[in-house]
Length: 178
Length: 155
Image (cartoon, rainbow over all chains, first blue to last red; front, top):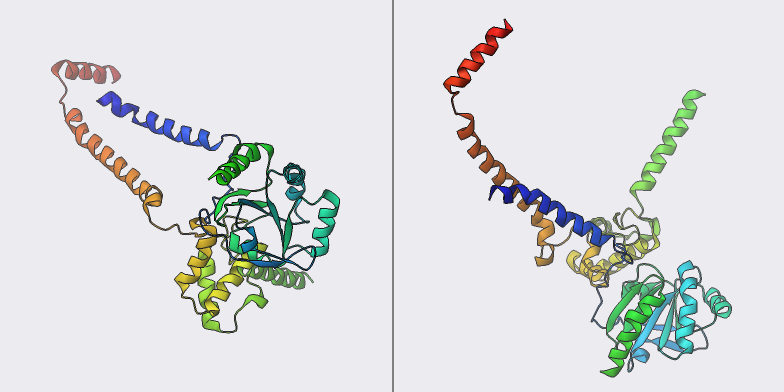
């Protein structure tokens, strides 16, 4: 019994050390917040489209699993993830909508003209209000919506190959199959 | 000359101080002082998600500005303080609150330190209670003799 008590601090240390080691695991970013909107209706929005006179509204997104990407021409990580979005769109694997967050339409247009346009349509969120409703706290952010328009997943920061292959595509397959 | 420079320096420091205290821009303020005061109280409780350790009231981040404006919109629309705060929590989750709410998932956070203190106190008490029994043992004759010898040797 006495020996067990003497070992108590060691056990306590091991628990703490284990927790710290777990927090240092690769790919973990403590600044990345879980979305509060998971499994809830995507907030309603109705934005002017970047090209043409059309609108981009929440209702148009429903019916199929959809990916919504918040980007901006002034955002450097958006340029990093853009080639990946282009590739996914070219492969026809995802139904991708864009929302230009706090960006001048002419700048968004130049951005897409330079790097290519992977989006089915882009809504202009000039004052960032739709972003605020989604809970965006920094671009790029990418949301997965199911056919009913519920938010199922959020990716904070630039998408990468691993996140797309391990999480995004399997989730879309699962949503599409059900 | 020196005096004058100090004056400017002091003025500048006061200016800097004012900057750090109020991130709220004049254009954001509500005309109604009572509503504005409520908005300020709420803002002090909300975390800026960009800087993550500043209240939106102190932060110059764009997002903090947006949230301040949203809080004021809600208040102007007739929300209570709790409703206005809930509007932000709905979007950003409990993390946006600088004071985390007490609920099962945060019990460890709230009561963990108290539990640790209690464990420490109980442990210390148990140890203290056991110790006098050992300390109160009188010296044996052999030990007394040895002590005498040592004391004599010294003198």
